Image (tube, rainbow, N blue to C red; front, side, top):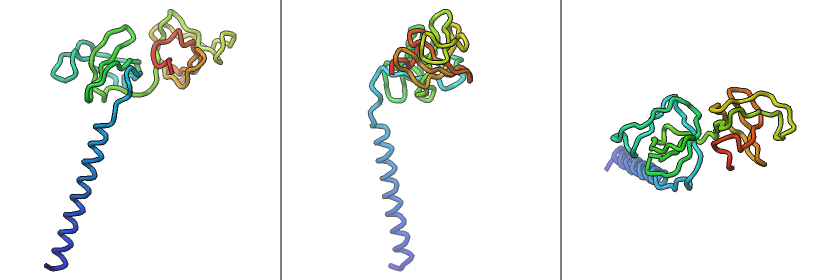
Length: 165
């Protein structure tokens, strides 16, 4: 055989080795264990459909138009997540509609957002029931929350979301 034949054979061998490596990596990613449930997530899209079952073949029972809304993931099935919303409604969402971004929603009539994690701290602003913000830290019964660029500390008991870290 000529040198060019050996080069072609070596290229094919290396291509096969590379393909096997990619398949092994993909298999490991699919086989990787999911987070233990329940865990917190948030809606990552401007519109997300909750379905009655874990497939596009199932009808939508809700359409959410609220990016960053916190949800609790209670079950995992392949690329589908059974989630619970702040009102206790459960259904299935595709994993691409969800994010690991920690968020929370105000569950009381009005929550004071304070300068520091203390009842005596100055109130910076007040967030009404239903306001959603991104959390950066929770501890000692308080959460640092960012509501569209306004930052403050809220009592964790006034929030529903990723507050049990």
